[in-house]
Image 1 (cartoon, rainbow, N blue to C red):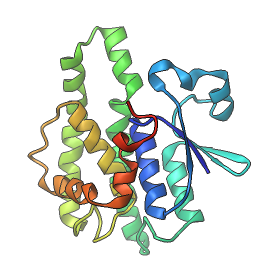
Image 2 (image 1 turned 180 degrees about the vertical axis):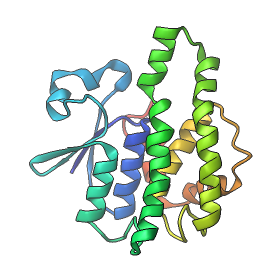
Image 3 (image 1 turned 30 degrees about the vertical axis):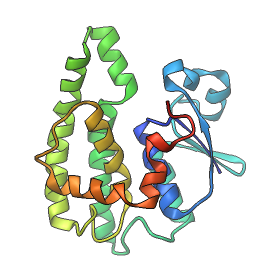
Image 4 (image 1 turned 90 degrees about the vertical axis):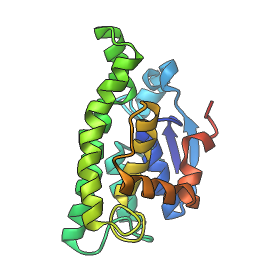
Length: 210
């Protein structure tokens, strides 16, 4: 497998976490979003949307991190990232979607660029914009972890929800969002900081990090 991604991209980060949790070998090829490499002819031939990540698997290319993570779970079910019970699976997917649909898309690189270039936002305004969406999302997630978690977002082992959460906490810190109101989420971050799979997936440990 070949993972095309950007070291600091939240979607690439969550995909790396899942690959590492599954214990799968993969090659990384960096796509520098700051330099516009995602818009190159070569990359658009892989992913016409011009976004990361893209995962090459044999003779096919998978795009969109939620689809990639679901494929990983179906093609490589051990260890599982979703519980066995259908209701529990829905709960984990809901937590993942809370981040992947309602938080992350509003504070990714291209949105920040639009805020700066089209609306004249400075960094303080961009940080405030990110916090506007991160804080209510994390408030809801803190409650859900209180309902379902036992060391991780759901239960006592990492799930799909943790693959989404840890990159979003990393992003929240970059935007200087105060996190003291979310002790359960911070406890999960602390657990991830000593977990081999999460360490291997961390942006600072990627070959294209700078």
